[in-house]
Image (spheres, rainbow, N blue to C red):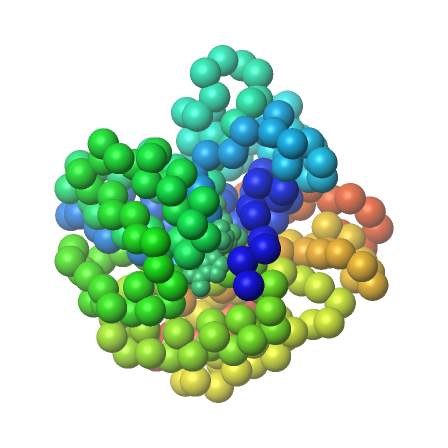
Amino acid sequence: MLSYLHGFHAGNFADIHKHHILVCLIEALNRKDKPWSYLETHAGKAVYALDSEQASKTAEFEEGIARLWRAYNLPESVSTYLDQVRQVNENTVLQRYPGSPALVSGMARTTDQLHLMELHPGEAAQLKKVFSGHANVGVHHRDGYEGVLSLLPPKPNRGVVLIDPSYEVKAEYDQVVSFLSKAVKRWPNGCFTVWYPLLSAERWKFMLEKIRCTGIKNILCSELWIGDPQEQGMYGSGMLIINPPWQLDQTLDQSEPWLLELLAQRAGASRRLYWLAPSED
Ligand SMILES: C[S@@+](CC[C@H](N)C(=O)[O-])C[C@H]1O[C@@H](n2cnc3c(N)ncnc32)[C@H](O)[C@@H]1O
């Protein structure tokens, strides 16, 4: 089933939380001259017009990127992320939002390699169009779990995998666990990051527990709650990071309280940063 289209949600509070962390991960890789690999299981279509029918229908970006666009005194890492959003906007008016592939390719050097998987035919076609002239970006119209697994371990052998399913079907929570247990064995030194929605059914809690039980070490989780849990809709966004770069926890402790204040929607807004599994040493 492929009914989910990210265009309805691009630039919402969850994208801000997820993409800020993603930019921090790429920034950390760029601190060394050595090239890196970026692999993505669920890429979407790279750039989203915020005046499209989809974006206008939900207007979720109003509570996300539109708030950030107007903000000032940004923490350093948030400022780096916003610079990438500016890259896809020609002037001072917010018109487009970059999805994860555009954010990462905007930070990539010519020696870095991107491998993007997208199963939806329309989204994959648009992704191919955006990256048609980019020699270091491979777009694959195929299942992201199988596609990324087949490329592990990648060359260059340092880098990040983003797993960003829509969780349209309950089975996806288990697919993520099964993917991680195989993928981390194939690429033990890779950094893997998984986005998950905080919803009242609390399937994310079971997913995290199953991931913890795989025995994978060195797992950091960041959760941003825009308000108290409620029956309908997503009340928060989570990012799990296996093998995070040195001091990512400190960077997030500096920037996420500011992001929380910006993105809070009602009483009960809060954030959590914790180690789901400690490192081996
Ligand atoms: C949440 S969106 C991705 C958003 C994107 N990662 C970003 O942050 O900008 C999920 C995408 O996964 C695609 N998708 C769903 N199942 C898939 C699968 N098994 N393999 C690859 N892509 C899939 C959907 O078509 C959708 O475009």
